[in-house]
Length: 119
Image: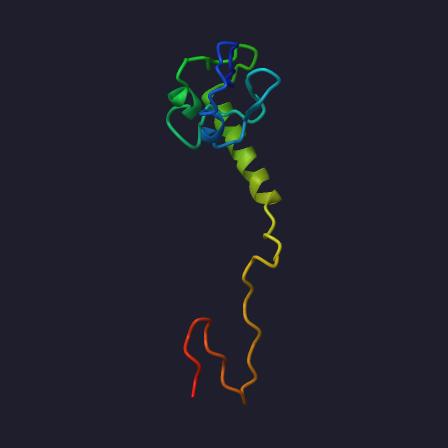
């Protein structure tokens, strides 16, 4: 089963960063769990991490989304495949160091940044 967050949630913000599938997000009044992304941490951990860190125990199983352990594992594999397929290399920006341009063979390579000048 996917998990759900009940209205006992105190919006303490500890569950959201613990979810390896990014299934938890702020709702209008309390945090919410997307059942399409929740695997109860199957494939990542032995126990649901949000349940482990919740200080008010407001994250039970969601009876509207009954799933077997095998179904949760299959969902984990689908989510991982989608994440891998959607992963693109980060664009190079001014703040991203790039590889130095090749130096022609007839010229010595420049000194690395911070190195004393060559004689």
